[in-house]
Image (cartoon, rainbow, N blue to C red; front, side, top):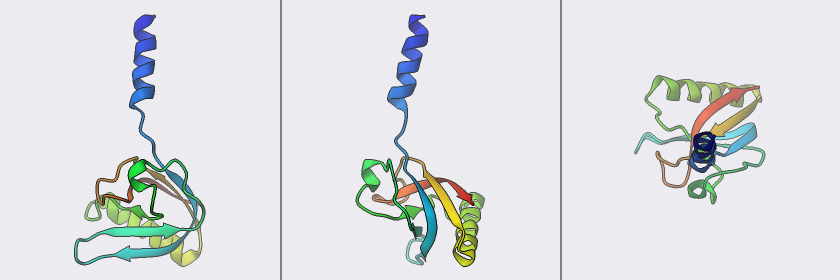
Amino acid sequence: MARLILFGLMLVAGSVVAGTQEGQVTSIVVRDSDGLHLFYMTGTATNRPECASQYRYWIIKDESSNVGKAQLSMLMTAYAAGKTVRVTGAGTCSRWRDGEDVNTLELK
């Protein structure tokens, strides 16, 4: 029993704070200088990690991967169609020091 309680405490202590936001894409930025892909949305982000608490944009972590390309495609589709997107962050700012990495995008 004690092992089970300890395991549960480790899971809670090790959980990552990850932001979420739902709204429409208002701007997509793709930079040639470093390949950075970032975007802005309407609505309010919640639970952002400390590294991303000052700015309102989200970052595609690996823009050259198949997942990164699919995420950009979804964002452009949502922007063009005026559709709602729900983004869930990864709880990290690994691609850029003050923008949370995207984990999941949902086109609604």
